[in-house]
Length: 212
Image (cartoon, rainbow, N blue to C red; front, side):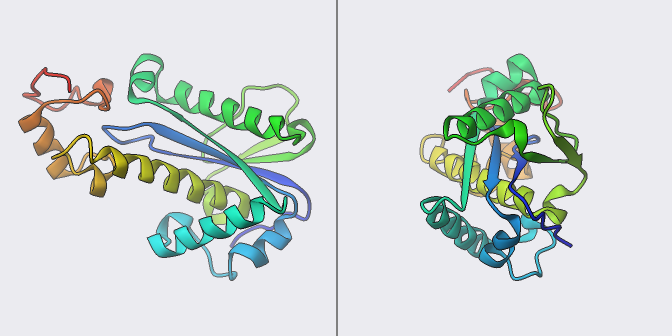
């Protein structure tokens, strides 16, 4: 069940840790009042934001955009490319995104040092003196993390579907970079692109070395 905190709060979640291609994306959501956020975004029946249909996710995203204009909610989104993931590792790339997201909130006048920050899974901010805590399955239990998950997923999915127009044949419009059977077949047939994570492809044999 979602836990609704009675004060201002920030929730952080990431998407794209596991795909063979595309960026990793993080969102940090600021809620002025998480109790009112319950009424605004959910009907009380939400258990796992990743199980929401595309239509429901998009509807919640539109409400977020509307309320952003009246200062009930704000957020920062940041991504790191496949090249960045290969060079620095996925965990360092995610942390770099987290810092970028929090800096974006700070630029909007949000005092991150005096607001509770809840992070999903094993995420942690490597900044001293922050009031932060991590929560396994946080997007099932905290409204701010659930909203961060939705925004991050919609942002990354839109990017990958747009990328499908440039990198035809890999099925990015459907697999959004994840290692589906058809995606792996396409890699072996067409070769790799600059959007693929080389460090994730070591177990896939017979990959042509041409970079698109």
